[in-house]
Length: 315
Ligand SMILES: Cc1cc2nc3c(=O)[nH]c(=O)nc-3n(C[C@H](O)[C@H](O)[C@H](O)COP(=O)(O)OP(=O)(O)OC[C@H]3O[C@@H](n4cnc5c(N)ncnc54)[C@H](O)[C@@H]3O)c2cc1C
Image (cartoon, rainbow, N blue to C red; front, side):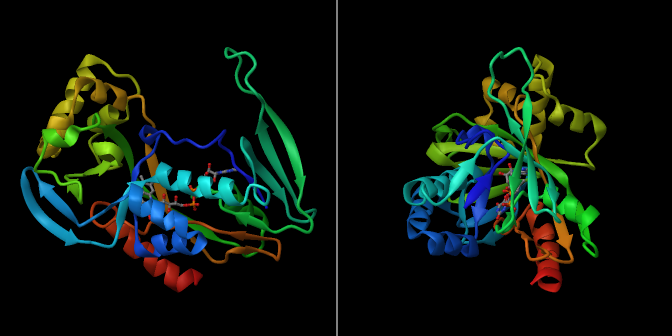
């Protein structure tokens, strides 16, 4: 098996990732694939006891869990990657820096843009076009919510239809320094918190993370602040005021440096995808993950819609 991945390599930096919850179905999938991964998840993740919603300093709702494991996306990626390297290195080859550009269904070819090595850091990255012959192979298209393969199918496969509904919210993260738990002892590592659009949880090593939900409906000035890419003293002060107002219980985590780093981070967005079929003839199949873990905040509404669609349209 060969995996073609657009990124240059695996990112294990927590600060480039985001917190996720692995539900029992996800944990079982890891266990069935390789029991070692389920053990690693239990060791590295923290079982979520409950989600607690706050308005200011007042708790307004609580959803018990005891089933979902809190971790980060990069931790799961790292676990999967380690298992592949340990046990399947000969059978699974990973080709990094290969971005799928187009497919040829008739000839069964895949065309990739392949990143060329950096020779001069001042010169923009160059790409080489590489064609992979796919006759006799099967294509598992796992290229995510903005899938190139799905877009291709939309334009070239008769009868194929998809509908993409963006979440209408994106997330950008603020991280505490390690050991920050002592600054807010009333926040418990085993709970995850939703504080007026800010998701607060612990990740590895007593680092706390605040995922700021930036919804399309926020006032323009607030969106501008939360999506700004340069940290100025005014913006850092405005960000502190914004978070303190929405999530006063997490305010002790906010150090000047951490607030400044926020402006250098990318934001994460998603969408719900509905397709009327998953196969591209007998050659390929679309595979994608679903948002399954986290209650509260934005997830719950989307999950219900997604679950309904999944049952009605796909299975
Ligand atoms: C902020 C946020 C929080 C979330 N929280 C949770 C949660 O708590 N629990 C949960 O269950 N789910 C959560 N999700 C959803 C979860 O991340 C997705 O359901 C899951 O990642 C989808 O998996 P996937 O394999 O379909 O796609 P992805 O994980 O997006 O993987 C797609 C891969 O394909 C690569 N790729 C894309 N285009 C190309 C191309 N043209 N050529 C080559 N490679 C390409 C990408 O680089 C990537 O590695 C969250 C998502 C977001 C954005």
